Image (cartoon, rainbow, N blue to C red; front, side, top):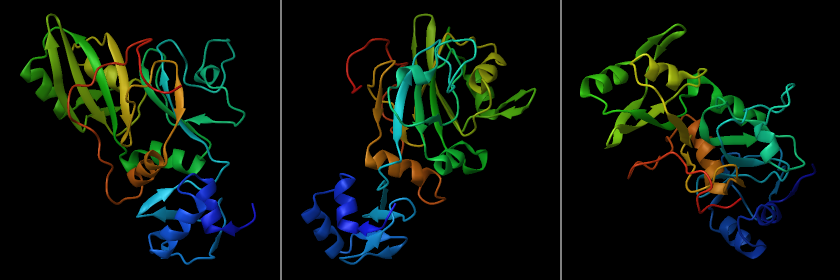
Length: 263
């Protein structure tokens, strides 16, 4: 892709109108590759890093970032030789996208998909410690001792599984809702970890990844990420300020067919 003037690129990316983009640049609020940009600056959308007020923005029209609320029973894979439903069956786009990590077949909730391989590798690599938040529905009240054991970590056949944080969100009648924050993506790690403490998982959903929240997006539906959400993912792997996750109020597994959210 040929270089284009910065204000045109910002306008095409939906950051601001051409006139407003010029004002942002004149005010010194736009940087290219770490340097304050000047009016008339040209950029390569596929290679240059542009930030506005310190937040990275996506200026490459060929890069796609979206979230899907994955239902149970759907495979996190691009295709399946057995013909079972996959997450790609729920997304009607011409671009070739790939899931960021995996959710097992019985787990629902937030799944990110993109064609940005570099960001995908960083988000899924354990060394970056990117936070993933899950809510798990388990039977019975969870004793304080069991919660303490969970926080200390559970030894599995492939090593210690230890949450970054864990708490009981709610206990009603014969069920409890747990919130668990992990920084790795081992296969069925949350289920196996809870199973090691004799907590049978009746329902499991991921509600946040790298500071990006599922919100009220309905099951089986998807939407494009906003510029701030894309910036949050880059922040999560930048080694700098960690993304701020919403922690107020109880999170529940997303309701199938519930109201709200764009599709």
